[in-house]
Amino acid sequence: MTEIRYLAPQTLDEAIGAFAAAGSAARILAGGTDLLVQMRAGVVRPGLIVDIKKIPEMTGIEETPDGGFRVGAAVSGMVLAEHPRFGKVWPGVLEAINLIGSKQVQGRASAGGNLCNGSPAGDSVPAMVAAGAMVTLQGPGGRRELPVEQVPAGPGRTNLKPGEILVGFTLPPRPPGSSDAYLRMIPRTEMDIAVVGVGVSLTLQGGVCTAARVGLGAVAPTVLLVEPAAHALIGSRLEDAALEKAAAACSAACRPIDDKRGTIVYRTKVAAVLLKRTAAIAARRAGGN
Amino acid sequence: MAKVHVTTTINGEPSEFLCEPNDTMLDALRGPLGLTGSKEGCASGDCGACSITLDDRLVCSCLMLAVEAEGHELGTIEGMAQGEKLHPLQQKFLESAALQCGICTSGMLISSAALLQRNSQPSEEEVRFWLAGNLCRCTGYDKIVRAVLETAADMREQGIKEAAQ
Image 1: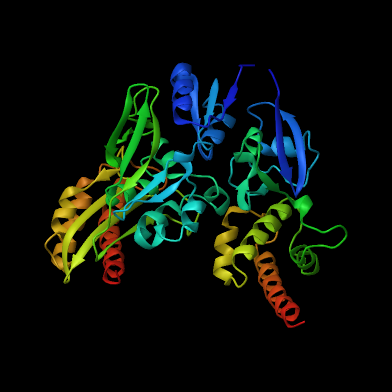
Image 2 (image 1 turned 120 degrees about the vertical axis):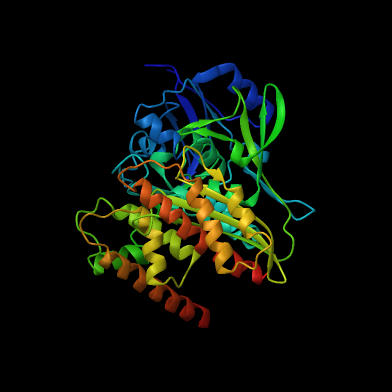
């Protein structure tokens, strides 16, 4: 039997030291809803498990004085849903995270794990991309920040350097008239993997869209930031022509696979449909802010 | 391999056990702790038969390492009844035959109790979404959902009676 060790450090420095020293045999444990399944299936046999949930920075939710949020990488979906303010400011990010798995999985699974698992279909990722979230990474070489969309490198792969740990997400302050939304297409009503996922974040001032970001999931090797779709919305009153143009930009960005859950043609078409529906929900919410 | 000593609280009682670093909480419950009410269905977090609470939040014990229990409070099906007195959900499941083979039942009860603790008046839709992570291959779910809704109504009525006394 392979020797396996478990560490639950209290500080980030201690976690990074142990994680980097153990090299590729080490795995980070946040909620464990992917890692334990992979271990059970024999896909992963870690020599060292570094549990990051005893590190306050990784498990905290903080509203910054400027109105932004810092969310620790290991904060579970249930804990985020219980926060009194987060879901009011970022309803789209919250609904995306709360679509991951069952209530049992919600009690454990985190946005940090969802991003680092590297699935193109991770539900929280398009919403985080649309939100313009930045991630903080820390490793033996120090601390750095990256936009969320630059983290995934391909299915199951990230751009984290060896020994680096995702510390948390920073979401920017929200101007008045801002909101967001996330929709995914699945063949059933619950507990499934996205065939297409769309996150839209926008700001409306006097009915005119002054800022927008669009994240698109499950239609390419990584989650995409679709800038042409955002450009089609900005400056418009979200009239049909602008929405059609943004929808077409989403379809154009698709580079999906054919599999049992959706064909290339289907995913490409649904990406356009979901963009329009998601933008409508975000706009309705923004009207109330 | 060196075993790890874990000190935790289970159903309100201080508890300690030894486990391997890669044992799941379900392994520890059913093994050294002898609490076999939590069941293993899929061992991959899909079926909910191993549902427990960790600091009052619902989790699958098959998706949690036993070593993670250190310093936390766990709730299992063994802590649901008060001695001989069944929890209202347990009583209602019996009365309305909301179970057949019984493998999913402890998970269904733990999940339903976690729902009613947060929401004393859930709609049928809310019950069905909340229990989406608990699979049952016998009942077709209808009797389970009705039992949860009826228990919620009974508990609300009981709450009103107790408040009036």
